Length: 108
Image (tube, rainbow, N blue to C red; front, side, top):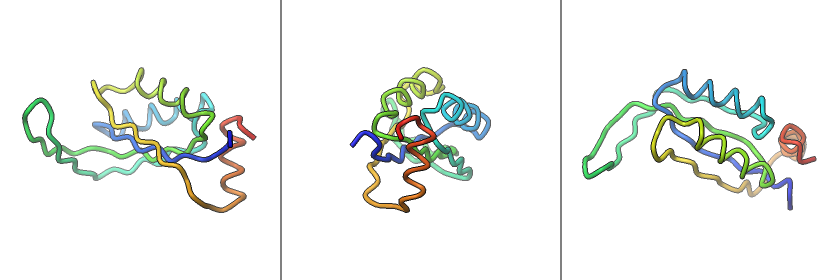
């Protein structure tokens, strides 16, 4: 189904960058909404070293049809070499909200 809704998770180094890229995604109509969640800590291994860094999480709503463009924009604009970009398919949700997401992403 072309208007299937995805929730995309992406971390950023700071709130400013998350908001800039979130606005770009909404303006380009590849995301209906981006929630910016500060106060995250990420513990991960990168280039053989364990890191413990503050980050900001962006929770992005898009559609299956919009996802390829969203991923391309995220990878081009993101400051990390290998940004977290995880798309999760929405199993169920409010019909009116899911329809709104599809409309905002040009998929309805």
